[in-house]
Image 1 (cartoon, helix red, strand yellow):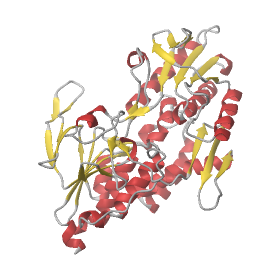
Image 2 (spheres, helix red, strand yellow):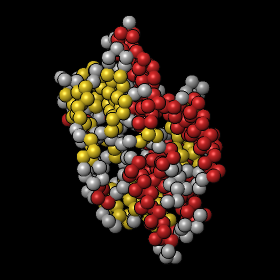
Image 3 (tube, helix red, strand yellow):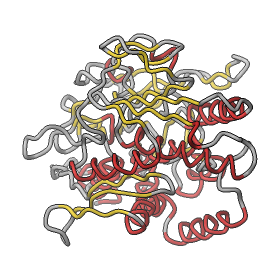
Length: 435
């Protein structure tokens, strides 16, 4: 019966982030011999775990080594991969339309295409929300993808070199948004300054680096418990980060950030990491319900409210929590859990049987302050409430989250070998990407 239900069915997954890639890999490995065809769509050709982009942006992580080729993963796991950007949806015909792919010279590499599906899973993640603030798009850097992170790294390296040539010049970097990305990037910038000086590339001393972290709310890391926020703030202050809470930015210009009180926070480099929204095209997907930040509204089963054959997971999904306390937060652990939920109950989906509701489980949050510290909280069956962790133990747990993602994608043997290679690289390669 199960074999018949999977025969000739086509699952199209749009978005190769953590949730989408894991789901494509696991579904294909289990069901491909039963006739299920899985196709993964992404606008990029390679995958890198999004929580690590701040490390790519400072050179602590070499994306050329840690990235994963979608085509190689497709061959290994047995699914199909197509590069492209989804443009529109036709629910009556059960098909999606992909825009043409152009090369660097503007020439068409791949024409516009149409893909037909039996089940469509949207896993396109999120992008930074500029909230319509004037000048953000023109003068700020976003860290939404590998290319943006790499561009910032090159700009940062040039800025370090330029500032180090003059003994009186300071390098000022302003980061708007004190969520995990903003806080972790603040610490990584000081680590980068230290390493560049150690390798003799930059003469910029740590006391000539000014990092300003701007948060509109009353505290940094607003989604985490107050004691975690306080611990992180204390560590940032020790590093020299100027934390500006209760500071709202109304515009951005070449000179810096303009607050609602008219103050200009001067900065040569400006990063905007305040809030998220789903990609704009989701708001026009053949009438599917979405919210004010473009997330597709889904039932607790992760099926969209108007079409049970279309699912959404991760940051692009507005999924209600059972206790009525709002939606599931946009975190990597939520995307992983949602992907696992669809995979676990895919037999029911194929047989058109009722699907159990997804229930988000918060296992805590960890924030890495580069090589200086790691703080966070763990939640689970072994703790009553939450357990605050920091230091070496917290760092081990933080790294293990990435390893769990690798396990879901590669399996035990490959993940073990990747971990071994990482350890070797720490010995034979520079601590920072220097070129």
